[in-house]
Amino acid sequence: MSLLDKYDQVSARHKRLLALGRDPFDVCMDRIVSATEAIIGGRDVILVGTNNYLGLTFDPDCIAAAADALAREGTGTTGSRIANGTYASHRELEEEIAAFLGRRSAMVFPTGYQANLGILAGLAGPKDIILLDADSHASIYDGCRLSGATLVRFRHNSPADLDKRLERLDGEAASKLVVVEGIYSMLGDQAPLDEFVDVKQRHGVELLVDEAHSLGVFGERGRGLAEAAGVEEEVDYVVGTFSKSLGAVGGFGASDNPGFERLRYTSRPYMFTASSSPSSIATVLATLEKVRSRPELRRQLWENARALYKGLMDLGFSVCAEASPIIALKMPNETAAVFMWNALLEAGVYVNLALPPGTPDGSCLLRCSLSASHTPQQVKRICEVFEQSLHALKGWQAAQSAAE
Image (cartoon, rainbow, N blue to C red; front, side, top):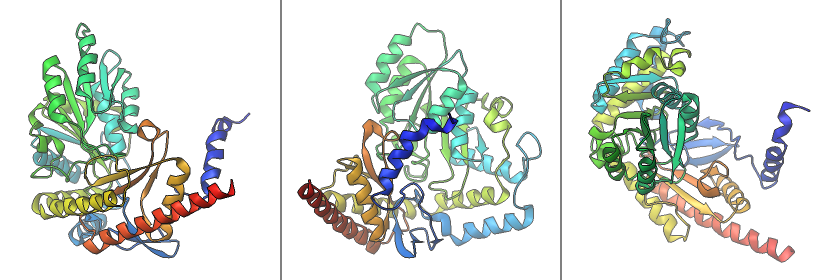
């Protein structure tokens, strides 16, 4: 018996998806044309599933900064931060992130996934308790497991349920950490941070907010949902990624806690992995400056998000949350979702397909993410393609019913 035999059922399910068209989990971008366009299978496609919220991946200044760093410092560091992998630019970026967020200190990681692993596994240990939102990202769950802490899940976006669970734990001597996200990546819904802060204060626990999808998107200065909600001072730890609004690769953790720097020599995911390449660091330094100096990008992003939200609502789609840069549509079943995803791609629009078990409540989703770089004409075209694909789905469903 092979170790891989346990995946037989998953493989069979994958084959059923392939019977409906392309492989939704192995899409190859033949060529990226811009922040919102690509060539896929020889066809021009509008990208509506990239998390490229501010459209900075093709910004000339950011590209120039990366190219300059590549020429000056080479392709990679070939070492970890505690060995030879700390360059002046790593320190500079950490200082810039801390200053941008108004925090005492920050740590940089090679990926956003590792940022959650490193911060959570460094903060908590076997004698601690982590209370996390049930819909938290896989990297949060993995970081919690790596920490060895006791995990307590509370209902998604429910301060009342968190409050009840903390009440039951009030007699416990263990340190407690609450973990939530700013925007949840599947549905695009926002955490009620002000209410979570009230619960946190009442029970005297610490709070970590993952601003991966909300950094650059929310707040007057783009610092995230905590800034927009006016609760930054009550958030003890911030985690985020460079692969969304900042258009690069990497992640960070930041805090005002004077002991935060201890994680540099206690967090294994930070200590034992090669550090980010100089070009990646230079890119983030450049994009961070764009977030500071170009608030109009956030305004354009939200205009695009509201326009697509209205267009899809008018077409009768079941939209999972209020308007945000992530707009998820709930489909009736897996077959309908996969058919629709293929129809959209065939007509020139790429979105994300999200299926159980990686979705909340076993939902089958078509997930869109908008960019400041989408033009009004592109948003209009996206709505037109959704309408055409919906008609195609209804026709296909009618034909299937007639054949049964």
